[in-house]
Image 1 (cartoon, rainbow, N blue to C red):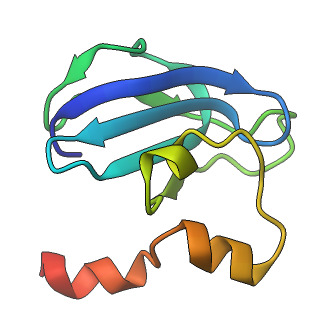
Image 2 (cartoon, helix red, strand yellow):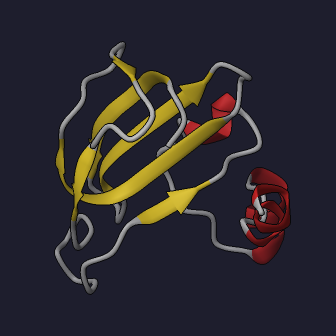
Length: 105
């Protein structure tokens, strides 16, 4: 994780569960959901490598333990409180994570 500021540290009962959204200095955001515990608060500055939460099983404890990571296209989408049902909605609101792999290598 890159440094940034926590713009949301909330519980979302409709599937996401404990959620942390970090906005980075370049304006990009990452949304971490399905956390068991949130270890940061809204407004807090986070540094590279800092633990911001623990792996969980979603709001209703129904999924295998995992981290759900979103790359929203904007701050507004990063702070959204709902799931998106269609492939078109997801494509409009989020960056395909596979598109980021080549850039990081």
